[in-house]
Length: 189
Image 1: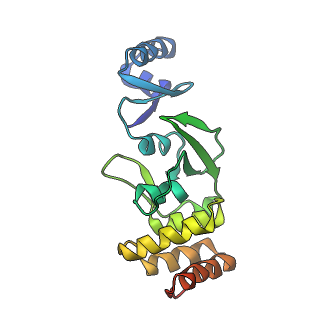
Image 2 (image 1 turned 45 degrees about the horizontal axis):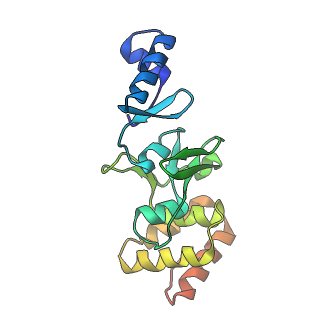
């Protein structure tokens, strides 16, 4: 558990909320844990991606932040884009601004929990779809990530076609075909 609430810690400790809150605040002031926002803490030294994707449930890292996670963009990011099932205010975390983009329930698929750091992260194909449907990622960044994923053999065209079909947007399919053709590749959707 990377991110935990006062209530969760209270259950584990078997004590009241006020005592647990005081205890966690003291641990945070001593540097053992970090305070994310009111009532939520994380383990000290956890990755920003793991923390960002565990603040709201369900949520996952996507779009430009996922491209950076996979090493598919040379862009420096200051924002971690998180797709969430509900609204949440932005959070400042380790020099990043974590933005939560609310997505319809039908778009909450195509992500997994990383065994490296515990982050919930979109598969590249889903991050690409989210960038086109939800985010305001500039097209050259999307094309760069697509090209690099194709070169690194990270692009699964069958998964991309399947995810595009689940998302149910005709405009999405034409956008993906346009990206593929702009870098002289073909994707069958």
